[in-house]
Length: 141
Image 1 (cartoon, rainbow, N blue to C red):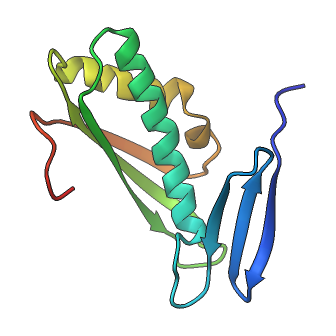
Image 2: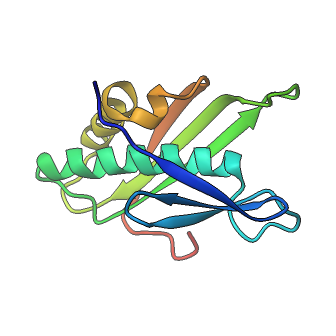
């Protein structure tokens, strides 16, 4: 049997919860209005972005071309009918660094999305991606 993980979700107020893992790290899951943290469906996008980012950084490091700067922008389109799942998710990987080529970067992103990203494999949505190579990070991003 595979690795088992447990997260405990506790109600803080009507539609605001804390989610804690076995190590005690906690995030707020917010359905209240106004929200003070990420909503559950935003957390799904964040999980996908974090999962693929982890893979890409690791792959680029192994290729001996680490990214000097990197961000992942994740946009999801939801169905109009309940359960209002994501039907399409688009992931934009933006980064660069000395010696990083668009070909290497795109290969790392493709490997993440097609082979390694567990979050992606668990989502029932069409997931597309693109790569943008930048010389320097955008100060506003």
